Image (cartoon, rainbow, N blue to C red; front, side, top):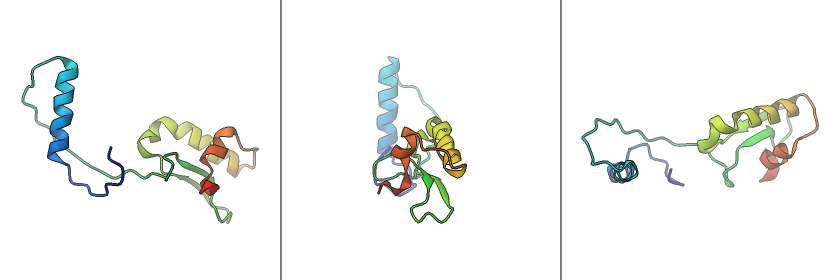
Length: 103
């Protein structure tokens, strides 16, 4: 993952470095591989944490955005934070850390 990149064209040099590192970790000689490289853009906030909870303007809009590369790992926590906000429950410590109004 490279911070600040917005293009979606795979970088061949980066791919080669990744393959070299993988073979080194595996302790094996490189073998020919047929790889379809892909690149994308991940949504992220300035501090790298997701934004979850009431929108900054407080107009009844709730956000669950910018999970970056940890979306699958953080999804249960983000879901709980948003559900608590929607249902009017007291915010958890996680809710304070992920509050979209923190910026």
